[in-house]
Amino acid sequence: MIDLDQAAQTFAQSVDMTVGLEEEFAILDPSTHELVSRFEELRELALERDPLLGESITGELISSEIEIVSGRGASLADAMARQRERRRRLFALVEGEGAVLGATGTHPWADYREQSIIDTEHYRKVEQGLKYVAWRNNTFSLHVHVGVRGIDRAVRVCDRLREVLPLLLAVSSNSPYLDGRDSGLHSARTQSFTRNFPRCGVPDAFGGWRAYRDYIELLLRARSIVEFTQVWWSVRPHFEFGTVEVRICDAQTSASESEALASLIVACVAQAARDVDEGVPYVDPAPRLVEENMWRAIRFGLDGNMIDLDSGDEYPSASIVQRLAAWTEPVRSELGIELAFPDRNGAQRQRAMIEAGASPEEVFAACVLQTRQTYAQEVAV
Image 1 (spheres, rainbow, N blue to C red):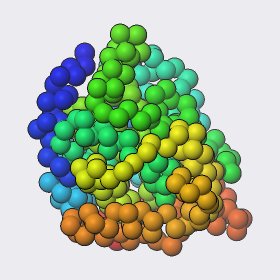
Image 2: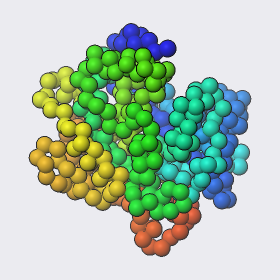
Image 3: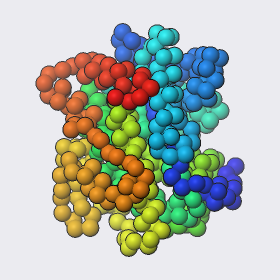
Image 4: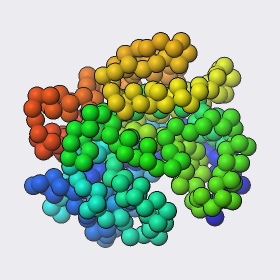
């Protein structure tokens, strides 16, 4: 049962700008790069041989997926240091057991009908409640938690991040393939997961804790949910951790991109909190306008145009990072957050290979190689 009074208390005791990172990887056969269902085996080995690693590994629906979490870092830098060490141990374990890990938003050709759901009470409930929607969700993402003190404040921070979500998605887009074909999209993961799951994607603007609590209580009375994590919004207050959790992004092929994206997300949450605290004027944009930018991010990523929701004018999506950097400059200066993104993101690099005639197998092999060469290092390169 969800204890909403306890959730409010958790946020009352939360510490601003603590950071937690969650990175999801595909478990692959090293020769064929097919998905292999080895999560339970690898986690058991980790628990036996390396308790720190074992406690940092979690499941994410299917047995061919594995997630590594940093735990609560006192700062972004601390969370990154923790995550780098855990990644290094994870990659060493996995490769020592004859597997490799991939980091793109979707597997290019895997058949979702051949993937098994992790056999735990939680995921049995998910499968029972969602059926095809759960079976269809073979996707990989980056989630970032940022501590925000006060649950009313956290909800209002989520409100202000609604229009930022499509921008973060465009920057992170890294999944042009799905079901063995070029989808024509930059983030097929978002189309497959966010458009299918209930209570997912861009949330409503709630205005504060009272309205958000009313919403959760309605879902409970109507027996739509039994756990708060069944509210899968792309940004949400996390009742257990006292954080604002941003869940919109594709998994990143290289460690440096994952860290750059995490840095940008932390800066956006921090600036939204600052704007709430200082009473910066804000009008919640209409859901239909945010959704228009969501579609543009899914379809074109950084190669298209976004709509400035204040002016109604278009601007190149390639300038998103610069625009977000300008908005977050005050808090980034204080927190020492620097942003360093490559010239092209994952989807753009994959699309360039596709247009040059590379096969899905060749494109994915290049991604897997880059992942092995970066995430396996204690310090990202």
